[in-house]
Image (tube, helix red, strand yellow):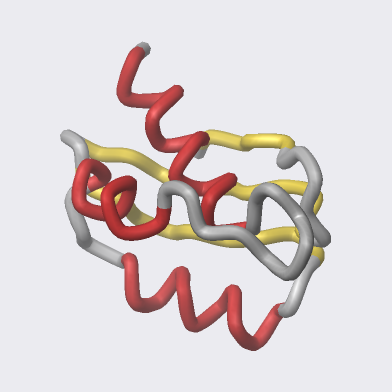
Length: 81
């Protein structure tokens, strides 16, 4: 399980597994729980590269990022390791 501490979002933390480039068990701590649970469910089993393409750069209101953008950043960082 990887834990990523977010920056600039309501969710403060994202936990996920990345197995052979596949996203599993995405859980957000904080934020809009109903929406974020749905996001985690929709992303289950998707290739990380596809998730990054879909979510990178999404903003929330006037913020320069969003919970989903932060997930894309976390996945990119993990893939680089």
